[in-house]
Image 1 (tube, rainbow, N blue to C red):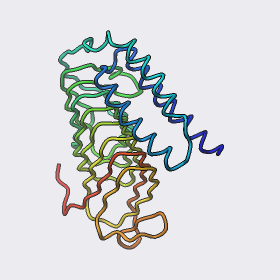
Image 2: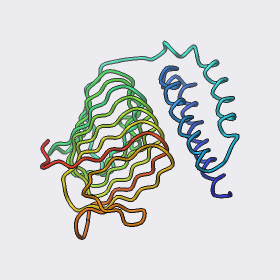
Image 3: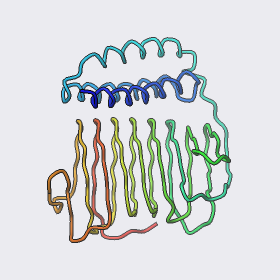
Length: 251
């Protein structure tokens, strides 16, 4: 029970972060309502799995107050055109706060960004924070770390390590990687990658996982091929994850 309380405390903190962004006008009421809806649905599924009640009523209380107080932000989204280049980093961190984002990798030594919307801290060492529409080009073989709070993100890239935290929205990734760490609270991830020996570790608390039939289940792991070097770890708290094999990789 102690571990269960810790898990719920951690998830409540994530909810509060979303609400804080809403209050600051970084996401619209419509985006917040969509995120809250998928998060609440995921929490309800968790309650059925863990037998822990009372969380949804807490969420309903704070969500109701925050949505009411934040209505003034519903039309306050600001927008501007931007075209810029920033130095490359080994760890490329991108936070998507709604909108439609395209991420591609090429044999370059910088990060290129073009689009329209809200752009925050793009010259800092921390996350590239984006809301709106944007095309981002990153160098090949870097570590890509994503946080997605709604919207649609399409990726076609070759990276080392790939990490994504999805809370609502959709991510379609045509990607080559050595290791992937995926965390889903509602929303949908579609992952296309080369057909190579790999191991898939799954922690599922609701939602749906679809993987190729070639995988063999061994305990809590799914394994394809001999001596797999590619590793995928997924925590699914509602939503859907689909892994598909493809014959070759092209950017």
